[in-house]
Image (cartoon, rainbow, N blue to C red):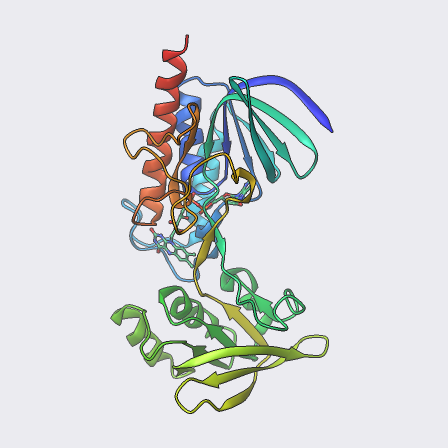
Length: 311
Ligand SMILES: Cc1cc2nc3c(=O)[nH]c(=O)nc-3n(C[C@H](O)[C@H](O)[C@H](O)COP(=O)(O)OP(=O)(O)OC[C@H]3O[C@@H](n4cnc5c(N)ncnc54)[C@H](O)[C@@H]3O)c2cc1C
């Protein structure tokens, strides 16, 4: 275990829009700040089609936007660690973050900005074929599926956008939706129709993913006829939503029924003084890049106020 002797003013956990913005604001308030993140970009890096709702940037890819965020962050006086926080503890008036690489970092205040991880299907075969046909990120893995047949699981905007993006590579794409109707916006539904490569299957319950070394088929049940149908596919992209990345703070903060962290919406502080949270990890209603960034800024300014009040 590596002991880091510095006691930071602020540790930010997470390198998505909320964490990066908190980092920029924290550094500009001259807080001695450390940002720890598994990766940069968070969910923005998974965005398969252009982002069209970030003010000032009419149309930009997720990867490009996050590169701009990261470049802006790295211009600040801030320490950055690429690591995963596996446990956060409160010891006296300080916080201790323990990481997967067995590092220990201490701070007077913490902002949790760990967002959400893709939700898994929890069907037989899923775990076995992760990285061998099962993917949770179209933008990351789609180029591996040139001329292949793909199933996208989930008929929301994320599923539709992943399918549209996959048409640049795959020859045929199915979208499997559990419900009678899809949740995707009209505009995405129209875009999907125009491709001529995407087939929508509704009322489909995924039962199993099959293959040898790589995925070669899936089994779904038609909810109306109760029949089980085998669909030959080479890849499966899972787009059934996200779940908050909260495992490392269990027992420390309060959660709502969706496992999101409860905060004071004015200050972003959790029930623990000095422990703040921002972005998709919190119970804020709308999950968007611009909102997460704003919440990150709010949280960092609240940390500044909190630390000033304790001087
Ligand atoms: C497919 C898709 C498309 C989207 N499209 C749009 C769009 O067009 N416009 C829009 O405004 N919003 C869009 N969103 C929503 C937007 O991406 C999120 O609201 C936003 O990314 C939330 O930012 P965040 O910083 O709170 O969390 P995240 O983006 O989830 O970032 C969390 C960060 O924390 C890190 N992390 C997690 N756990 C740990 C840990 N234990 N230790 C260290 N680091 C950790 C992760 O690696 C990640 O970098 C989309 C989301 C998805 C999934």
